[in-house]
Image (cartoon, rainbow, N blue to C red; front, side):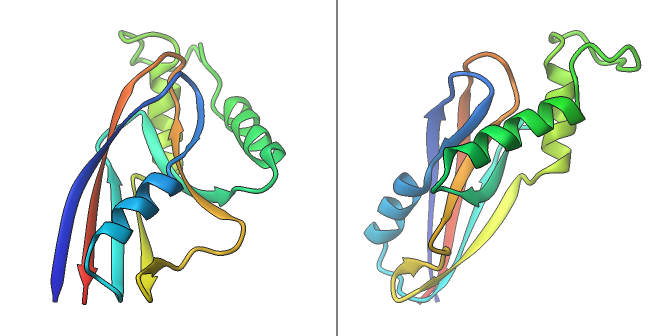
Length: 139
């Protein structure tokens, strides 16, 4: 069994979904592993990881707007407000989505569906530096 690890650093420009599929695929191709499992883990509590459609941008737009309606800013019931009105909603959105995802590897390629991409879902309004740990195990 082989193992490869890395950390993908990226900058977001505020709320939204950021496609990291290309960067992840590029890193996977550089490893000498043909069959296995890739685990991605985002090291933040106000952003998350999702696998989502990468063909129609309206899907991403609708998902972003749904989350904004589901978890609004300035809810008077929030006690945690020290970091701004977008911070507590960001933590809730992160809890509702995922901080870690696993993707199988077959034939040296990620087994993503035709219309699937890997996204960082930034839940804060402003630019942030995000760190995603990658671990690939297999042979």
